[in-house]
Image (cartoon, rainbow, N blue to C red):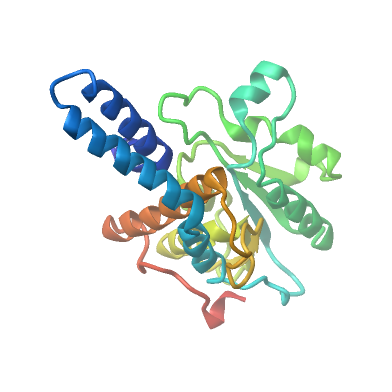
Length: 268
């Protein structure tokens, strides 16, 4: 139920959808006796678009997330396993085109390959099913094998967890799949903005993993100068808002023990 509710809620708070609904409602009202309301609706929608283009709210939200776990430059000499979280391959395009379709989070896979070579005895896991509300027939894990082959990772080293639909299920189902030994050290790779929520869910599952953030979207300060960028502003706000809402609802529903998980001395 949580999975479905989260998808429905996000539809109504997605910045792009808000803009779309504002335009449609304003246009429809302009053809009725509620023209004054239509003018206000369209004016507020235009103001909203200007704010998206000029105020870097999305960058601010993402920077706070990405700075939570610094790049991990001090790793153990031996680890039991390495986990990379999904959200990298579009399984629907991959199926239709007959070739893996990789999105902008490709650094998760290259970092996974690098660590796999650094730790040749480590167990390797890709965790990713389908996070699409009405698209559970195709699983992301079923389409990443050829990519790993090109990256030089032996197929028989990789375990695929293909049933998870969200971050909480990544943690629970991966732990159930690999059954980590007590005291064994595991590395988790995901995008830096997503790392707080990921670590929170693994801790909730009783698994103290080592964070390995990659795929940065912002500078450390979050400031890249004044600019007018509507598309970038909308996309950045969508990413940042989605992740902060995820942290909030995961905390309220008990999927993490902390609202904003951070580094601990015992995580590597």
